[in-house]
Length: 155
Image 1: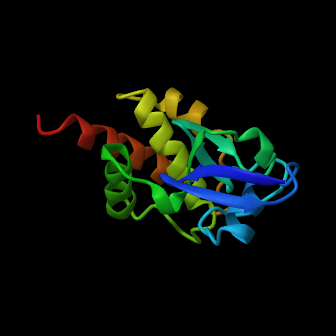
Image 2: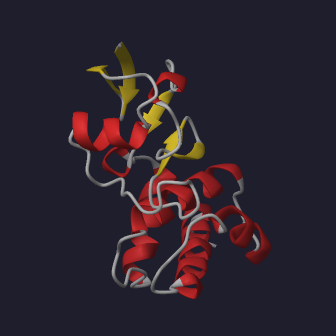
C-alpha cells in the first residue's frame, strides 16, 4: 500500500502494509531512529511521537490510521515548548542511560502545550505512561517545572 504521510513538516511517501506500526515505518522506512522500540505493546512510552499536539505510542499505531495527520518525532521538535524542555533537560542533567528520553521529551512537550503551569499531579498523570529504567522521575518532574517557568518568562 502506498501512503502519503506528513512527518516533521515534510511530505513523505512510503510503500508498506497498512497494518505496519508507525514506529517501524519511522525507523526502517524513513531512517528516523530517535523514536525507540521499548515494549512493542504501548506500555513503556519509548516510542512516543506527537500527532498534532497529542502524544501517541507509535509501536501500536498502524500507519494506515495516521491519515493526513501531522506526525512529529524527536528529530522534528521545534517551537517554544520544545526549546524550553531541551534547556531544562540539559540544565537538570535529566538523562541517565537516555533510552526513554525521546518519549519523555515528547510527553513533556505535549503536556506544556496543553497545560502552561502543570502541578506535580498534572505531570505525574501526563507522564505516567513513560517508563524510565533508571528512575529519573524526580529530575524529569523538576525539568518540566523548570521548562514551564522558562515559558512564563522573567518574573
